[in-house]
Image (tube, rainbow, N blue to C red):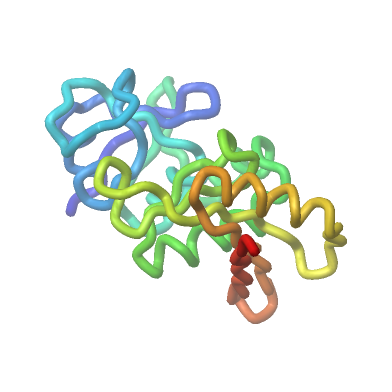
Length: 183
């Protein structure tokens, strides 16, 4: 796949070419077609909107080239700098995003579930995201109340709550899943 062209618009990346939008979406469910809440396949006629973390990953993997509105190309280092300004703890979140994507999962923002990521096994429109992932730094304190709140929310929406703990020096991520049982 040749790299797709995207334009940085505020804190999103827009792929204006409909054909390139379809190609990128069809090769990994990247982004969301503008104005299409639940796309079914690649038959949409709108630009594709990418989150910055997705764009960073796609630049890193050579699937996307990003340009400023003025036409100046943004390097991988440049896109990471933008992401660091926009995301709290970007580097740890990116490490988790990259780990999940590299393993073949489809990763989307989890903001509507109150977590970092919603993770699909097959893709939106094909299955529901079975996992909600919250990123924690190795020495970060987590309370029992926080775990119970997250677990109850995940159970309510029929998803498994997973903690992702990136280990930067080892360049790996530990995942801890919680199952909730009713007696």
